[in-house]
Length: 190
Image 1 (cartoon, rainbow, N blue to C red):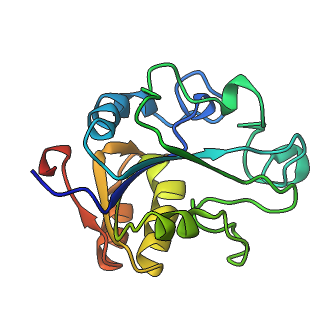
Image 2 (spheres, rainbow, N blue to C red):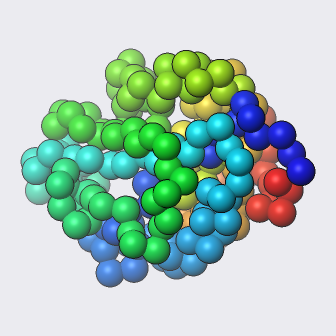
């Protein structure tokens, strides 16, 4: 078994609004939960869930001129984690997209590329040097989180079977991740 004592699992935006029936549902988003729950049971040093946590009139909403429908509004059912995501292994939650005037796809930085979510400092404080990233949506928030993890110096793995994207074919996203130094692994690799 792989030594995961300096590794963190990052669960990206596995929230009700991104699952079937949600305001911004990722196609087949719920199909990742079995793999995600299997990963979360492994002996990672930390299991960190990112959570979109938008104010009511967030800049990313169509009503405010953004590209997306209203989703993951702070304190609503849509922003909650689904009951089918086992909460026990989650050691930390990092909320993102909390400022009205800027969005945040990455778990590390807001889209202005200057405002930190605190994830890098958390990982440094825990002595983490390796992250395993999975969740929703592969071609947006998972990719942004994984690329920022590489940029921050972490050995970074993405688990394709524990991700789904908006695009039907993940090939281009996975190729981009690999070109930037992200390793693609299976749940069984751990």
